[in-house]
Image: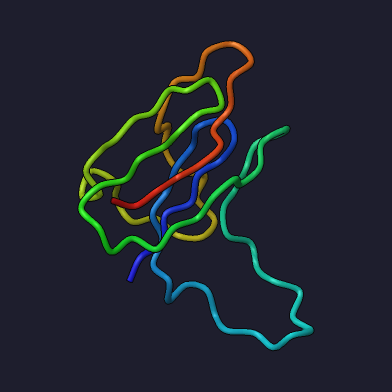
Length: 96
Protein backbone atom coordinates (compact mmCIF):
# COMPACT_ATOMS: atom_id res chain seq x y z
CA UNK A 1 0.00 0.00 0.00
CA UNK A 2 1.12 3.56 -0.69
CA UNK A 3 0.68 6.75 1.32
CA UNK A 4 -0.01 10.23 -0.12
CA UNK A 5 1.51 13.23 1.70
CA UNK A 6 0.65 16.87 0.99
CA UNK A 7 2.17 20.12 2.27
CA UNK A 8 0.70 23.53 3.08
CA UNK A 9 2.31 25.01 -0.03
CA UNK A 10 0.75 22.46 -2.41
CA UNK A 11 3.47 19.84 -2.81
CA UNK A 12 2.36 16.20 -2.96
CA UNK A 13 4.10 12.85 -3.10
CA UNK A 14 3.34 9.16 -3.07
CA UNK A 15 5.49 6.83 -0.96
CA UNK A 16 5.31 3.13 -0.20
CA UNK A 17 4.15 2.44 3.35
CA UNK A 18 7.00 -0.10 3.54
CA UNK A 19 9.46 2.84 3.71
CA UNK A 20 8.15 3.69 7.19
CA UNK A 21 9.46 1.14 9.67
CA UNK A 22 7.42 0.40 12.77
CA UNK A 23 8.77 1.88 15.99
CA UNK A 24 8.04 1.56 19.67
CA UNK A 25 6.31 4.22 21.76
CA UNK A 26 9.58 5.96 22.58
CA UNK A 27 10.71 6.19 18.94
CA UNK A 28 11.83 9.57 17.63
CA UNK A 29 10.09 9.14 14.27
CA UNK A 30 11.65 9.33 10.82
CA UNK A 31 11.66 11.95 8.07
CA UNK A 32 8.65 11.41 5.80
CA UNK A 33 9.21 14.16 3.22
CA UNK A 34 11.62 16.96 2.44
CA UNK A 35 9.83 20.29 2.99
CA UNK A 36 10.94 23.79 2.11
CA UNK A 37 11.39 26.76 4.43
CA UNK A 38 8.03 27.78 5.94
CA UNK A 39 6.28 24.65 4.65
CA UNK A 40 4.99 21.63 6.56
CA UNK A 41 2.96 18.47 5.99
CA UNK A 42 -0.77 19.09 6.49
CA UNK A 43 -2.14 15.69 5.57
CA UNK A 44 -1.49 12.07 4.80
CA UNK A 45 -3.85 9.45 3.38
CA UNK A 46 -3.56 5.76 2.57
CA UNK A 47 -3.75 5.38 -1.20
CA UNK A 48 -6.14 2.54 -1.93
CA UNK A 49 -8.32 4.61 -4.26
CA UNK A 50 -8.42 5.71 -7.89
CA UNK A 51 -7.92 9.45 -7.34
CA UNK A 52 -6.59 12.08 -4.95
CA UNK A 53 -8.21 15.41 -4.04
CA UNK A 54 -6.29 18.35 -2.55
CA UNK A 55 -8.37 21.13 -0.93
CA UNK A 56 -7.31 24.69 -0.01
CA UNK A 57 -8.46 27.10 2.72
CA UNK A 58 -9.69 29.43 -0.04
CA UNK A 59 -12.21 26.84 -1.21
CA UNK A 60 -10.35 25.55 -4.27
CA UNK A 61 -9.82 21.87 -4.96
CA UNK A 62 -8.08 19.73 -7.54
CA UNK A 63 -8.71 16.06 -8.21
CA UNK A 64 -6.28 13.90 -10.19
CA UNK A 65 -5.75 10.22 -10.92
CA UNK A 66 -3.65 8.40 -8.35
CA UNK A 67 -1.74 6.77 -11.22
CA UNK A 68 -0.53 10.25 -12.31
CA UNK A 69 1.45 10.47 -9.08
CA UNK A 70 4.64 8.42 -9.32
CA UNK A 71 6.11 6.73 -6.26
CA UNK A 72 9.03 8.55 -4.58
CA UNK A 73 11.39 7.86 -1.70
CA UNK A 74 10.97 9.36 1.78
CA UNK A 75 13.61 12.03 1.16
CA UNK A 76 11.92 13.45 -1.95
CA UNK A 77 10.16 16.82 -1.89
CA UNK A 78 7.36 15.73 -4.22
CA UNK A 79 5.67 17.58 -7.08
CA UNK A 80 3.32 20.57 -7.23
CA UNK A 81 -0.29 19.42 -6.87
CA UNK A 82 -1.97 22.84 -7.04
CA UNK A 83 -0.93 26.43 -7.74
CA UNK A 84 -2.06 28.55 -4.82
CA UNK A 85 -3.42 32.09 -4.87
CA UNK A 86 -1.66 34.69 -2.69
CA UNK A 87 -2.32 33.90 0.99
CA UNK A 88 -4.02 30.55 0.29
CA UNK A 89 -2.83 27.23 1.73
CA UNK A 90 -3.66 23.53 1.45
CA UNK A 91 -5.76 22.23 4.33
CA UNK A 92 -6.64 18.65 3.35
CA UNK A 93 -5.89 15.65 1.15
CA UNK A 94 -8.37 12.87 0.48
CA UNK A 95 -7.99 9.60 -1.44
CA UNK A 96 -11.21 8.94 -3.37
